[in-house]
Image 1 (cartoon, rainbow, N blue to C red):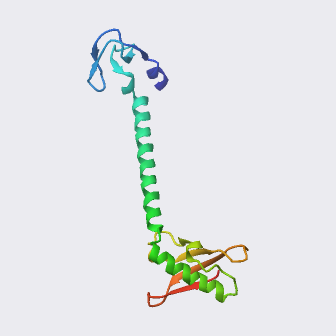
Image 2 (cartoon, rainbow, N blue to C red; image 1 turned 90 degrees about the vertical axis):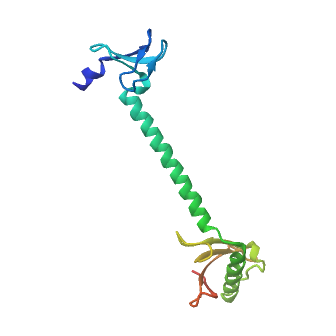
Image 3 (cartoon, one colour; image 1 turned 180 degrees about the horizontal axis):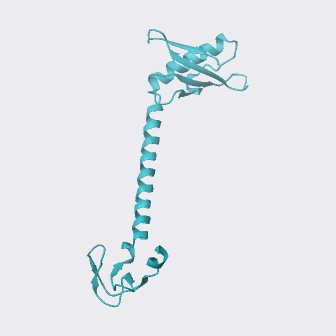
Amino acid sequence: MAAAAATQWKTMPAKYAGKCARCRERIAPGDQIEWNRLTGAVRHAVCSPSAVAAAKAAREAEAAAREAEAAAREAEAARWVPPGARRRVALAAIMAAEQAGRAAVDDPSACRVVVAAEGVSGTEGPWMVIVPLRDGGAPVRVRVTRGANGVGSRAELP
């Protein structure tokens, strides 16, 4: 039955001016329309149910992509570690690597500091620090957390 209903509509360019049965807007000669063979009704080709559904799906996909992009930007901003905190965390990681007997670099700017937990501010931690070694060996990963009183920081090699 649905297949028969679908074949009732024929797509063609409009020969005459008219009004769309769906949106009630003007149809100009030459506009792409669908004409119903049984009732004589006309509608814009973009007003057909399949075209409307496709346009709605495209709008929803575009909105979802915008939301995902905004969420990614927000997550990246939350994971950003301010320079002062970055230096303090890198120094704690270097000291932990040295205490573990690793020859870590002396320059905190050589360390890569990232937030180790999802949904946590870059100033709150915990942080994962990649500490390069002076001998050129594989870098050391050091986890740095806030101290018990929230002032200092504690570093440990996983």
